[in-house]
Image 1 (tube, each protein chain N blue to C red):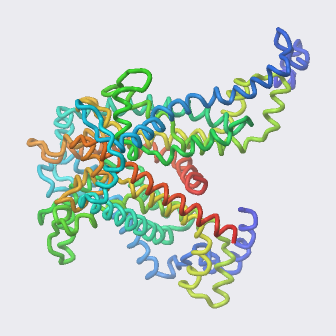
Image 2 (cartoon, rainbow over the protein chains, first blue to last red; image 1 turned 180 degrees about the vertical axis):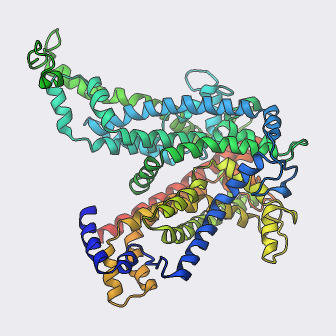
Image 3 (tube, rainbow over the protein chains, first blue to last red; image 1 turned 60 degrees about the vertical axis):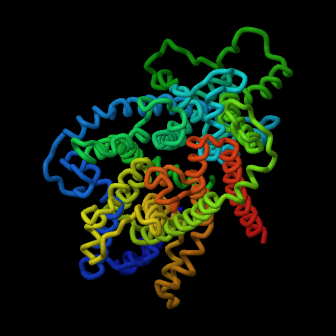
Length: 307
Length: 319
């Protein structure tokens, strides 16, 4: 891909610098010191994009540390810095919600990744009777997200068929339904399929058992795929709203996403508490995204093109 | 191996092939049996979880949709009555209309904005990378957070944040989500804001795979920007965009969190979508049979949409 592209580019660069830059993008827009008008327009447009797509999130950052007694005073520039919003939000249960969120996300992610790894391994590295059926059963679950089955799911969680246990109001109730995710099983098995079969066969000849092949050859070789699974799993679980809403039996079991609504307006600090809560809910997703951006984007394109 | 190769450990001789584990050599039949059973063992946690939390609920939902569910009196079989009620009920028909409008407008708006963003931010320069990464943040933010924040931005008074911004451009104060005629539109705007950067990244990946020489030769043939976009860029993006549109439309059909937080379906039901109706019917009115029937209809809609697009793509590939 890169090899044929660099050659003509290098050639055209020697011919004329502007020509090479011109056809480097679909827009072919001029840029540089010799074109002040185009450059200024471009910069203005970039500023607009940043304002539109980051402005609201920046307003959360400012508002969380600002004295903002009512919604009319939200602004990008802080006037009076304070930590009071967090104190009040804490009294309204912010730290309980955060703890719940971390607990749910941690355990659900652990479960989801383990389940995914084993299932993807079976689908990608084995040939067995009923394989097509298993794949179909797993892919079809992507048509059944929480929304579509919300009503009966809440009944099933209230009385697990055949077991007679109720998971309502428990951590397990929020974690188990997220244990299996068709998307991540599919994506990881696509990654695993690309590992050459020779490696596995060589290990088998050396007498390695199934678990050793799995743990010492396949898993280390599909680290990029694992990264995608972990990061997308984190986002998916942190984002949950309807499921915890159904499962929880009292507000002190809410994760952050659901708990935010209880901080909407607090007499002492107005919308300050909600903004503090929103910031706490935003930070983990933003950190994970910024830290693993490359993995995130590679997963985005695999997921979109293949899924 | 490395120690022997570098000669650090002369006492160690070549280990040779590893010894077979002690015990009898496994028979061919046992190996074959293990080959057949082992994959299912690996798959069993996933299948078990899917059975309990996807397929059993689905089956229960379909079953319930034929009953009038009464908590203490016992369920009563009513056949297709619940489905007949769907067609009769005005509020459900309106919600269905809103859902279709929401899914279509949000999908189209997001891809349009995403396409423009991608064109604007394509390139290898470091500052472009920065703007792209920053513009992508709405995608990673939790839906609930996004909706709570936009609820504040849409504060209806003239001093609200968006209203004071609008007043710079000489616009009157809007009532945003409080206005029954406009509320759905403002909810759609939030959906576009959240999803456009996602579409942008996918389109960018598509743009990167276009051969630069095509632009150059098209330009040499006298094609202007618009014709280059129409005849070179768009055809190359078509496969990616089709999938993108399908997925977004399906997701739009089952929108819940945004609408529930922003408006709760109000004012006066003007932003009610299928999911907020189902939630109200199931968890507030406790009309589980009817709510289940509505869920089944929602499921069938997404199924038909997926099936239709798959069939269309197959046909196109064949021809």
